[in-house]
Image (cartoon, rainbow, N blue to C red; front, top):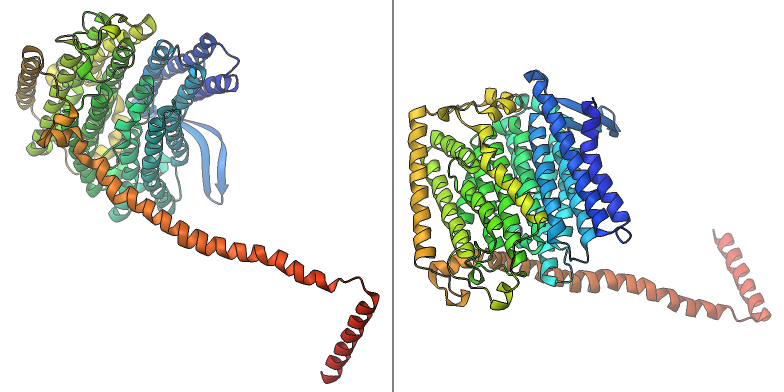
Length: 637
């Protein structure tokens, strides 16, 4: 049997090797060979992750933690930052999602990108993306995590702007990169403070020393770390990059939204559960920002007509619910919803890609309709994804979302009410998407419909696999109230045990209250589905053109004009300041001084060369004058 340490090394090493093989031979490899290498490397990583997961299950609960030391990276005095990998229950869950869902997205990309001239380059980027995300969740200290953190930011820039000949796509890539740098600055400052206060950057060391630190210090550290999470996981106010990230190919959208990138913030806070638990202010901040983002993004999604934009704002909203759970101290609930969300959101994005592929690039839902009989597999799997994200039992999203709502109600019924509203809005806009795309009259052009057909197996097979996961994935966390054991809670309990001990409040609901809440949520959900059906199927309502909108509808369609506000308050003043600095500091200041010194050299040379006349008598005369001056100076002195 291969040792767990070797398997741990292979998990990130294989995608990295795949990236190097494809990237260094991008023009030599055929599409088939390149995709085989890229997909095969991630598949082997998934097999290694499954093997490690199964071995961890056989370990005693208290010993499910393995550290693999690679080498000493930075060593100065008592400080030692090692390049080391950490395997524990939390990491193992992320490894399964990153490699498992990532592999399906790789396979899907074979069919989706088959005619693209950058096919091999695309797969090299996908492999690199997976490698950095694996490094992020496997690092045993903040520095290794930060390498992965920055790496996924780089890969998102490369993939969002993959079609770089389109300037709008380049702008979207720049926006994602710059906005993430804002969050990353907060993360980096938080890491600096951790080192200053704990003299260590290892997760286990910091967790053990944190209870002795002052609450004020921990609050500053956790807020700075949360700023990083807000950027990477697209929370208010650093969320606007994620909807624009739809500029990249659809498999990129699925990878960013489901298996990598946006889940990094969730992982980081969950990994730092101890120091967050010791800072009630930071916990409340995470909770409030998460809840506000969930509701805010859900309202925007109501009036979006681009099929990928709807899903993008849905991701922002769902991430908000995860942060709500983390802020409530329900760390397992947040991770649970992250896992189920990975299944159904990857399914929804890849399903949307199948629709776009069939309609020759069309993304506006107003130009779709009636597609269910033309794309039966895509429709069936997409329906499963919609049911899952809407929280319909027994689909995966029901169990994870119900646990978040139960924790919110136990903490404060008002939180439950706001979270429920965000969830119901999700139900409405997702069924709006479903009905406008697959039901009603066909609104696509005759030319497009004459070529429409179901996507190839390389696209439909991953959809079916994700559909199955979206159906059964929630059973890993069935609560006791429904006769389950909540296996996930037991599995992750060693990771969150210290935080649970330190927590000042523990909220639990009795089974009868849970049943009542479930019934209320399901009842409202069904009513919302019926309302959407009546509006978009029975009455065949099709959203009007953007120019015809007015009032609240126009505000929502324009996303509360947040981008315009940012542009007015931040971007334009920065451009103005840059121009001022360019004129008065760069050109009239630095350039002026440099140019003076530069021009003085040839001018001085012109004057100096006059002393070199070539006349011997002139030279003797100068020597005599020099001797006279020296003698005079000596006598006077």
